Image (tube, rainbow, N blue to C red; front, side, top):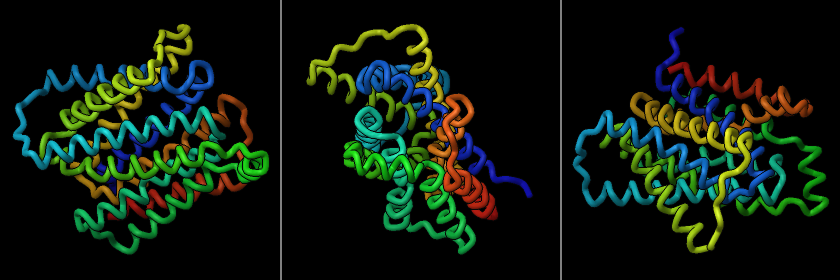
Length: 288
């Protein structure tokens, strides 16, 4: 069975975002979420500018499309702000599974806004992936402990990030169709950079270059974020938003596996089960 190119791009986005979040979390613990986020998005903007210059073509932008671009860009950067703040304030086991549910918002919006329809097998696969992400990214013992000890402060941030990203990713398809995946990414990253620099200026946050190793972590996360967005946008050329979104949203499962491999964090049984369910769901989704 040949795997659809759009699904391959979505899997690449999943892997890239999963690795990026792993590296970003290590940086956030050292230098805080504001500095980490500004450096991350600045690095992600650079290759977007280079590729946009090389492949530039003057698009025809209507007022309607400009409005969609602005809404997608601002809601997308809000997702990053509240995710990173949630990572700093709360436990990853609490924040990640909530934030990863952005695909539910995206699927609902894709249905109501664009009338996307799915086959019963695809619906089964999407549900499997959503359930798998929750189980794979949640350590229930840590979650229970966090709630008991009142360390669930990142929940509100995670919910805001979930809704913000759900809106942003749902609106990406018409932008990609109109201007192409690279130019769409450039618009979003320019908006993100402008919003972030306005934000840190208003809050009078001092941004400084961190030690080399920490900078390497956050810079690599920025490059991977560019790769993730690019491949996600490319996936929208051949697949429905409702199909690629739950695949890309499985990124926390990748982060969990990396923590298991490199940080020797223990995978509990429900996390192992969640990873298996995600793989099964991906197979069902690919049966198009």
